[in-house]
Image (tube, rainbow, N blue to C red; front, side, top):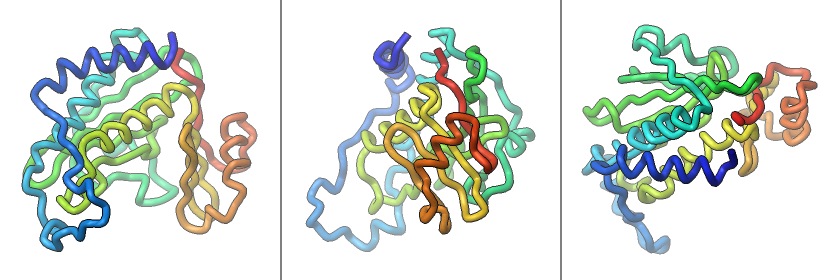
Amino acid sequence: MDEESIRTALQAAFAVTGAGTPGWPDPHPDIDREIDAAEYSRCLDPGKYRILAARTQAWTQALSELDLAEVEAIEPTAAASAWRQGASQAHSPAHAPTRTHRLRPHQPGALPLLIDVHGFDGLKDNAVALGAGEPAVLLTHVPVCGCDACDDGSTVLLDQLDDAVLDVITGAFAHVDTPHGAVQGGRGGWQAEGSAGNLDVEQLLEQARTGSCPHPAVHGTRWW
């Protein structure tokens, strides 16, 4: 098993789950063009973001069919408790989920992946939050905004989802709660909140990955 095999399985699954949710190009390809101010307060087609739920469905199908994880459904009434509380409100999505499930890896020491589908602008399934661990810390929430002005096209959103999933299943993801704020990182770098960015973030993340971090940390092995 390797990342290329997993991506191949994902694309095969998405050809089916995403058949009814086509992608779209960046509506603002000219970075020098001034964006219409009205775009910041509207989303003319919120339904197009259902492609995100379709992508998580494809990930669920691919990872379970590859026998890397089993699917655990979570009742809506229990969804809030699936998220970790503590470090920051930013790590507890404030929304009412439509459906939530957990992918529990078979590999000992690997982190579970939490998938939370919810909605905006009157829909129930056009936004996604991903979490890692049990209870989960927030990996990503897409779309971050959803207004037309912030629309960069579907490729950016799908890449954001895929990168978050791959960070977990490859074992690259690490999260640390420090007294100054949370830091987390993966294959593409790291991010920090509050004044935690002034710390030696690389060292903290490495300590999390080696089990020697002095602060509460979330990290797991790869899924295969």
